[in-house]
Each structure stands twice: as structure tokens, then as C-alpha cells.
Image 1: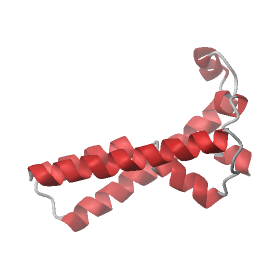
Image 2: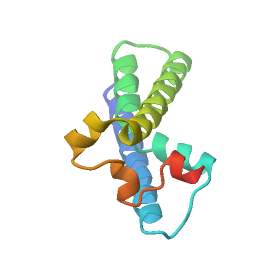
Image 3: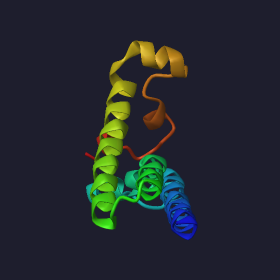
Length: 118
């Protein structure tokens, strides 16, 4: 079981670094992503920690690999939903802007959000 936990951790930490790299690269205008690429980046950045936790919990509770994968996919969809909601709130909420110190923080920073892509 210990080796499986380590495997999950190392796999997901590799993914989070790829996701962060894509985000930085796009931020520096080297590439303008399409919708599919955005979802891939967001899944590899925002969703990794929750997905890792879901895999660790399933492994510790001896959940079979098929159910673990299904649960992880559900967690990834929820994480993407969170990211999209965060992007919208950043453009729609004056309270959020006051907390962050700027309206539309990600767009102001030049990040390629789904809203910018569309």
C-alpha cells in the first residue's frame, strides 16, 4: 500500500508542475490555448491536489482501482467547476475584487482564462 501512495503522490506532483508550466507559458504569450488545452491545463493545476487526496483516501480504504478512477474523475470535474466559478466571480463580484485588490485579477495579469479564450 505504501508504494501505491508514493506512486499517486509522484504522478500527481508531476502533473501539477506541467499544469503550472502551461499556465506560465501562456501567460508569457508564447501560446494562445484552445478550450481543450485550457481544460487540460486547469485539470493539471487546480484539480491535482483534490484528485491526489481522493486517490490517497481511496488507497488507504482499499477501494478498487476502477472506483478510485471514477471518484478521481468526479473530483476533477468539480475542480474544473470551481475554477470556472472563480473566473466568473473575479469579473462579477465587487466584494471579491475588494478582497483581491483588483477587479478581474487573472485577466488583468494577462492569464488565459476560459473567458478570454472565448
